Image 1: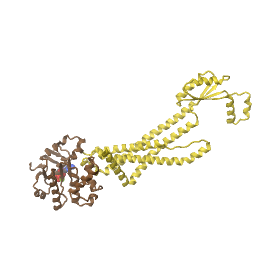
Image 2 (image 1 turned 90 degrees about the horizontal axis):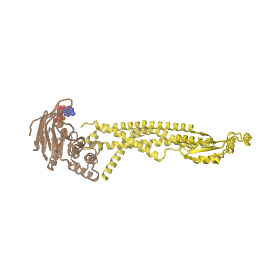
Image 3 (image 1 turned 120 degrees about the vertical axis):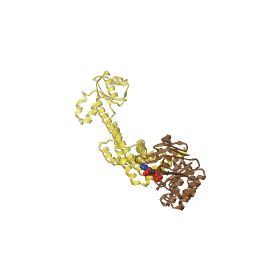
Image 4 (image 1 turned 30 degrees about the vertical axis):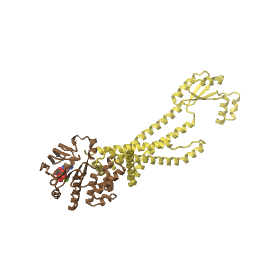
Length: 219
Length: 299
Ligand SMILES: Nc1ncnc2c1ncn2[C@@H]1O[C@H](COP(=O)(O)OP(=O)(O)O)[C@@H](O)[C@H]1O
Ligand SMILES: [Mg+2]
């Protein structure tokens, strides 16, 4: 599902964020990407959803060699994956419903189908009944769950999450990670960047370790 | 197809919602566009009125053919009738000419002197079919070759001057329309640029979840077309108000000159044309601005 080969990334001005990073995540697998702050976790996720391009090396996601993806295909590629951001990137002037509906609307879905899917997604993350509210009226954990509902509403085969529990207390973090695990049991491939070692110990998931842009374990 | 229309209708309604949320800014832009459009439109409609007015003044480019003395006028009239391109002929006999002269000159009684010896020739007033100066000139040349016609006088110079003046007026309207059409594109382009900037977050999130550029552009294009159309509507209202204000003075002129001239504002097709043009230019301005903004995005 995800394959990085000899990936280097140097930002236009500054440090080499990644040097010779390589790993793969199989279809249906759940894995944690970990390492200290500044190790390059976010950079790896940005390369996977094509928010950044590698300086050198190959990134293959869901069968697409990203270097060869034509620009006009980029939106369609993005619809194959679901992304959860650390700062959740919700639209604060739109209702919870509208935020979650966005991936369906951009794909051209309308009417009852949108309604059904959005309510089902909110049900899964335990926010059924909150669809008319606005994000700023929700707690941090609830906002993060809206972000997760938005990442899943269009049923992507791959879910990637950048520090999804970064701002949450331990109990809420457990809930969120359990949610990811449940999706994984339903066949979704999951890659979570986190430095929350507690979660890694709690679950028996695979761990990919980065340290200062290098692979620490090549498992 | 139904889904496609539903989608467009939804975006359109959302655009209206955005307008309702910032009524002051929208109103300002609309009025600005209205004022921009009212000048060339007003000039154009004014020019059409002028054209209609001068058409009423006199049969355009009529020719006066003066008959030679002692020639039977029926023969000459028959000969003129043979010339292609003649719309109508009106014969003014020497007696009629004298009577008209007597009345219009105010020399009613003095003209009696000429009762036994009328010095005026018969005149055939010939109206050509074509109104272009060249066709009038051609007819004049042909009339000169008709036996029995001593002299042909045309109003050609006057016609040419009027045509030149009207052509100049049209040219000025076109130049103004182009310049102010560009101004409209710039006004809406600038408004769109600001709207895109203020919604940068939303645009980036829509991009992240797989929205195409067309999807991102759509609400801005609707807003641009709607602003342009409303601006045109504003121009029509201003224009109608101006014509209403001019109606009184024109009516007074009417009475003074005994003419029957009615000032007419833009008709329905002109009004619809202006609305369509405003919407089109607004769409274009928005398209250019949002296209530039999207191209400057990374990846
Ligand atoms: N947009 C950027 N421009 C320049 N340097 C960056 C940018 N993003 C990240 N970096 C640098 O790349 C390195 C890796 O950052 P990041 O991938 O965010 O690490 P992590 O998510 O593991 O904390 C850091 O040194 C960071 O300063
Ligand atoms: Mg990070």
